[in-house]
Length: 360
Ligand code: UVW
Image 1: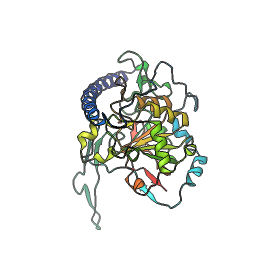
Image 2: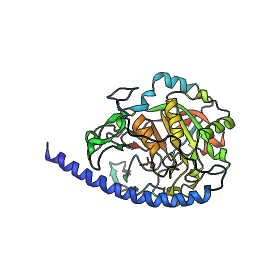
Image 3: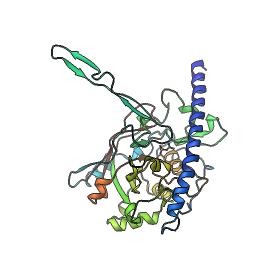
Image 4: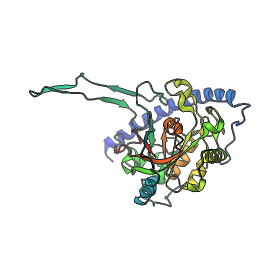
């Protein structure tokens, strides 16, 4: 084996350990803070934290993928077929386009130690050129491109460790792909964003903030009963939710964006394993929310951390779009729309930033 490869592996292992250490520190602090805040705010409320009825089990291998085969790396983006596009187009009635992503800026709340640093070198960066004296600007961006701000989680983002610490053969991702098969300091060798097909599908928005009558609090889990209440309030039919559709959850937590970043980062309301299973059973292609992980943090089951990420992304190839903004859609009572997003096809990337839209 070539020595450069071995060196990459060592570097990767070192940086993985470091990130892990930092995340554990963040999660301990965040979950403790979040649990205290959530406990104080949710206790006594009509919707107290509920124990997740479905336990995530890693005992049964989730590969080879039954729907798209053992070599598949595109997951639920395979639902994006010409038939799906034509079915979705029927939902476009008034031609209105809503931006459902947020502005990217250095001040936005970031998970853990992630960064978003934009610089314009030179001002102007270059020129003047020719007698016409043309000048120009470039930008330099230092950031986790797919994991800051409005972010689309790809299938290379989340895996599950099944064996001993450091055993890359037993860290498994979508379709059973191992860390050893993917690992590369210069971009993932498997499950990179280049494998994800552009999304053009029907979106269904559940306004759970409206169901609760106020912003949900950290640790408050959205239940399937909440989804049914939301559908009733919003005039939606469960039978309308079809294989390959996208589902979105409004918790109200997004109101803290740039207003109270510390609280925003301390935890969040969101879905748990019960709703995750509902999504899997329906063949949903993508979940999304107005907060940073779509799932509830801390999980009411204190042994679970980001368990929904594991079930949806890793085991089922279902994508996840985080830090969305549904303000315009909710103001106009538009709960069903065409969701359109073409992730940046960066080879080997774990996710994508970008500007998702809802078209009604
Ligand atoms: C993690 O990276 C665990 O979460 P997110 O997908 O919310 O960034």
